[in-house]
Length: 506
Image 1: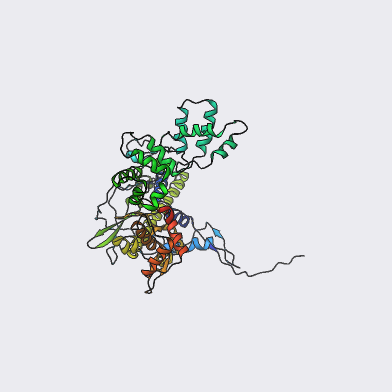
Image 2: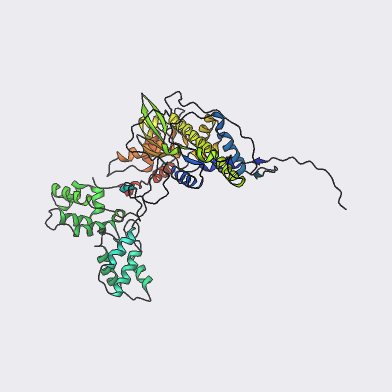
């Protein structure tokens, strides 16, 4: 028989209120997702409307505590050993913080009367239009289906008269073409893939291949760089003086040209230096990667969340208008709450509460994004002034400690948020990179090291490119000690080929 008893259990409970959940969700949205969310809420909540009045200071007590947001979500995602953690939707009192001052010590502010000089009109993000008529958008913003190289070649194949067997061979060949436009499989493998339905010999397959190589872009389906350049030269004007020599170079002497250079090869072949230079110039005008002419992915556009502009010898940071939609309470519907029926009044009160929560959450999001952007600019002034080689090492923890926010909050703010600078538009995460100790006791970021490697490669002799070992030695001479494999990793991260593949004619 069970006896009733009292037991004490020590536990820890974490509570995320609906308001806190909403703030966290909005914080990790991109500006485009935020615009979509605001439009959706404007259509569904009659208590919300676009605020056309002049912005004014908000009460400090109406802002959520970003530290609470970061800490709450961090703990909610963690597993506490021996501690009972549960997440509920009950309402808890939120800590309140005062609004940070608009201007910091180094001209990092967001003044309402300051208009930076940018090259384009930032999106307002305040449109409440529910229609889908986008005809008034600029042409480059219109959505369009992207045509792949495969689609482009198949379209031409369907317009080319061929026998049924040749058409099937052409389909197999086109299917074996990579994104760079080269044939990725040998003809023997293609012949085996066609059997037993189609019995074709290699000569027949090569004949169809030659027809495809004349498709647009010219030189597609080539099996080597030599063949790719040679096919393109066959369509050049036969009266062009360097054409014959260029075709001979493309077919038989590309490797020798890369190793010996123009003058030595001209002497070896018994041609004049002027003819050799003209032929090499013609070769360099050709496209070694014809497949790259056809788009394979849709263009993605980003909307900056903040702008960093030079002002009076310093840098100022201003939020984009899309980052803080101007929303307000519809006073007409608010005045109906006290006169409506019980059910209508309950509905309007719920919508009013949700509207207030959304406005406060948007204010908190904008304030957090601004503070993080200001802090990033403060740490990366060297990059803004001098370029990538002046990028300093920076990790999320440094920003979190400086702003007294949780690291998870900084992670959310730096994801899919973009800062527009005179050097381009970059995701916040771009400004964070690990550091490598230097000989003088300082540190260099991986971004700065990559920029140094890129500068060395751009300045190298094209006939004697720098190997990874030489790049390592050059960096060591500048006080940065790295392993050769690390230099190779940085080079590959920038999509720079090895020294053997970079060797080219002058």
